[in-house]
Structures are given as C-alpha cells and as structure tokens.
Length: 113
Length: 111
Image (spheres, rainbow over the protein chains, first blue to last red):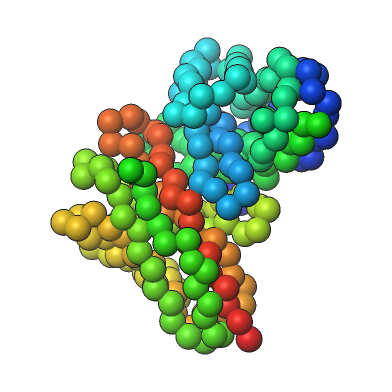
C-alpha cells in the first residue's frame, strides 16, 4: 500500500478564493505529479517534479502553481478559484531510479461555486 | 489522435466468465506499459506491469504486441469485485518518468 496522502479530500469553495491542495508521501520518492481528472475522463498531467526545487508544467494547461521545497511535500495552489477548476485532483509519486510505476493518493474533489 | 486509446465499454460480464480487452498506443518508442485499476470515485491503483513476453498474475493476463502497438488484458473467472475501470498506461518515450493514461475500459461483473 502506497503511503501518499492528500488533504482535503473534499472542498467546496466560492469563486475567487485562494486554495492549496496538500500532497505528502513518506516513501522518499523523488518524482511527484499532479493530475486532473473529470468524471469518466482520462487523467491529465498538470504539474510534475523530479526532486527538490524542480517543477515543470504538464501537458494540460493549468492556472495552478506548485512548489517542491521538501522531498515529501508537493502542494498545489490556485490563487483565484473559478467554477472551471471544479474537478478531481490526484497526486502521485514514483521512485527515481528506472521504475516508472506511479502510486496515487486518494485525491481531492474540488467544487468551486 | 490520443496517445492511448481504449474502448470505454462497459463490458458486462457474467460472474465466472472471461473478459478481454485491448488498448492501442501511438508512440512506437514507448517502453513501459501498465494496467491500472480505478474504482468509482477512487484513485488509480497499479494492477500489473506488462512485459514483452506477456505476463500473468493470478486470474489476470497481460500481453504486449509491439508490431501492432497494442496491449491486452484478460480476466479469467471474473469476480464481482473485478468490476472497475481498467486504465491502459504507457510511458512517454522521450520524457523520463511521465506516463500517458487511457480513458479506461469499464468492466461490470454481474451475478
């Protein structure tokens, strides 16, 4: 069982609010990822990191930002939430050396009113 | 064109029966292949990696066909608990550590 945690699990918030979605893993994995998934649709990579102080934008354009100050922590921030940000956000991590298997957290379901 | 394509289903399978489905991928340079399972409103979980020679894990068998660029998953003796969406996942050949996820094939096992 993967040790990767996300908080909050559910969030309902009004338009214009700033939010931070937390993701932490205790496996010492170097690589971490944020995906966005709408119901019945595929996962879209929005941010990834290969280690501390490394962050890259993913394939899906996103207004969110991320930081990687500690290996175990990879928070995602939305400065001004909009209804179009309503989705499920999944965090994942993967060991650095060769292995590409990704382990997912339980996700955060975000609803922006 | 999507990098990874799957039949969305649903595949309705009687308990105890066998079900098989494929996914196709577009990048011939991809080297790593996986099947993940995703239950409704849950996170994806690794079901199995797919190796060139094909591999089996209990009731699950995965095959890779590089020439035709598809992978397959076969589930034998289906259980009610096998009901889920199965995601086909392929690495991005030119980008270390990034994966491409298919939209998933839904399997519904009925009593």
